[in-house]
Length: 96
Length: 485
Image 1 (cartoon, rainbow over the protein chains, first blue to last red):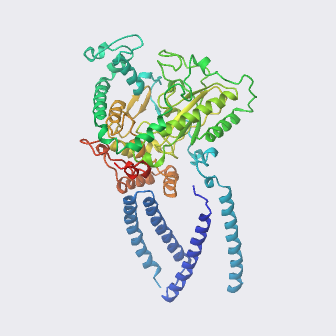
Image 2: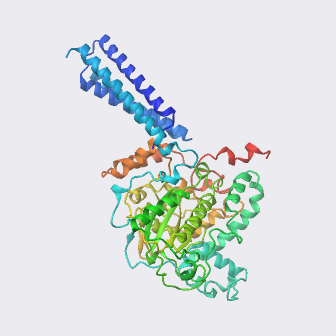
Image 3: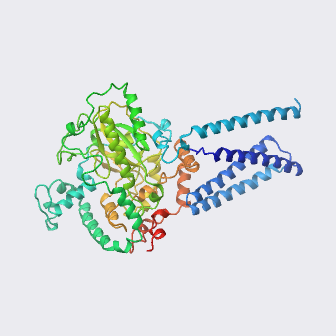
């Protein structure tokens, strides 16, 4: 399924590191915005980020496959849905 | 435990986990067959990556509605047409001559019976000839543009004629021909299970992407013509017990750029090499073997054997669709008396998906593929979608190629003919496990709304179309990239 080249484990390690740093930063953002975060709020945020990653990944995979129009349509369709969901999630998460 | 202490231990645990992850990832990097270069995955069967176990079924997904019948050789368009051409060129083996004014009534058997039952096929034969003539006249207009594609296809087909044909055509009855060169002192095989495992590994090592084993049912054996013997009705030879069925795909990018840049011969030539070598191998270990290979050297029909061997399911377009290769699955087989365990067929929802999809029917330049929601024609005792092979062959003769070289649009546009990357793997794995059908509906909507299709007629040359291809051709087949044209 995946190609285990030299670069791939290093790439995913770097992505993991960046994600960890991102969540640390996000924690401080929420603290500064005086938003109280509970475990379920973190879970909702994490699921949304996974969906965003899948949308971006899907679109760029199709573009990489020489299907640029399909990739852009995929991005527009799911991107708008993900942004709308993101707006809804923000309203829930931002409740103090 | 205070926060500081907790973080200290959590840090140690995370570090250990990260190191374990690095070790596991590195081990996989060292061990995985995916890291092999070139065609290195193939010998280990790693192209056959779809887990069929959850989808094994007792009964194959084709629908038996009557008494299954054997297929007569004239039902195959290539063998029927070559017989007709021989007649028109006054080369009939019995010296019979015929001209069109004599009509179907004046044709010799078995052509007379076939065309009496299929009068539209008779008319289509002459339409095809007309299109072929027209295309031969038009070819000088296209021969520079498609110079490389034509050369590439010709290279792949170059060994398909002449005395050096490999594998050699059988000569004499199967009871003799299939045993020529068989080792008279074979070692005792431990068990049929060992035989199956061994033969699959060997077939993969010869380059087969997919391999399966099926029992040979008599309805999968042609009637009326037997290679090595001639035009005879025959009983299925006793020693045609099992078929080792194997498949390879076409080269990816040229396949997407069908019809004018793709060729069937790239896969055909690979299949012939695999089959020829496997035939020799099976004989060397003491069993009879006969190759059934493209383009026309078959005594067995391939798609139902592929279904029985658990490789895939029959598609609306009349070909075998497999989870790994989709419609990009070209088949060959070896019939043998080697004791083998037959694989079970699968039901991975491909047939059900075909009922809804119809993309191949929409895009078929000849309109040969049925739009029926479900198969309704009973053909030799099986309910299936009907393919108008005569109209299909007329389209072959209409494309901007040097001669009729096939089409493959229905293979290329098939939603199952997709790459092996995460997004298509996700679809491939989730869809057959979703009993609600929501996934396949969503996939189909995305396929139809996100992807562009040129449209059936566009693949044809002007004035009917614009020589469009389904995908972008690779630069190495674009003549204008390398030559002044």
